[in-house]
Length: 452
Ligand SMILES: [Zn+2]
Ligand SMILES: [Zn+2]
Image (tube, rainbow, N blue to C red; front, top):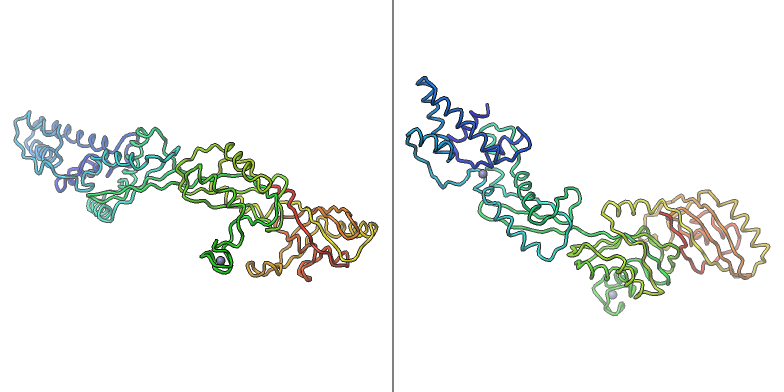
């Protein structure tokens, strides 16, 4: 019986209306914990008032006892007024007593609201989420209380607090709470007599495609192999193996515009340093950490980047993205179709007829077939040594000169093209060199198309 439990609680402790309501929070919906608490105490007052007015000494005495608990221990005004009107004296115990469970945290919510305003100054966000971490004293106190009175329908302190703050902030900030993917997290660290607010700004993700129009730059920055980034004579004290990278060329404009602290570049695979990325470009997602500005003018940023990196790097298709898409991008990059253009040389001259004959053979052997590729020697220091099976979809070829040819090769993502051509000392099989029966010397490579 709820009424008995409430009277049992108040004969021992004072708790505020918010907390008494929370102890029965799973009962009755579409109301607040404070209203729940008030209704409980009001019903109790009314019922005992009725009993007091009815005849029968036994009932009257009990009703009086309960009305006094409500007036004295719960400091409940309607019960106090009933007693006053009936001319019955009562003495409020500790009229300024704090709530045993929350130490009046719930009665002073505005305190917790006002401080956020200052913290959020200068941060742009579209939605938010409130979180809290009450200290062990608050948690233990409440757990003990629930056990003592066998309260099974109570709501946790945390969720009550988060919701109450969230509702108030919604009105104050004119922004909606977002539970799955909030722009910012407002975290309260609570103890009975103090609190701290931390604002966690979630990363902003921008999707785009990049073209690498020149050779010799890596996708992301590489630390100097000698000093591992500290700076040494070998790297001219830059700490870098290469002067710049796609990442370092693209990111600064985004970091500047979003006022982020830093950024992380996620590419859908990567091309070798000496390979160009042409066509519609390679998908990437740039993660901007701690951005103070989230609503960026992507058209403007694209223009600025492309103007300053003219003939080196180009970005396109910029749009907002999220963390889930980063994971998808990484996973899908292995299953894409890629089209390459490879320029190849031979030492001894060959005739056009010989080339055409070998090209026909290449088509029969490779097209829509799987090749076996053991991890190439050149990357074996950083990749696991294993054999990968990759599909070659289509091959076309062009005889440029008696010792210079061009191949266009459509393959499954992750195929090592240089090795497909030169055979990598038998580690890739079959290979173009194997079919030509002469060593093909790889000259240069472009990625023409990535289909994602
Ligand atoms: Zn309370
Ligand atoms: Zn160095």
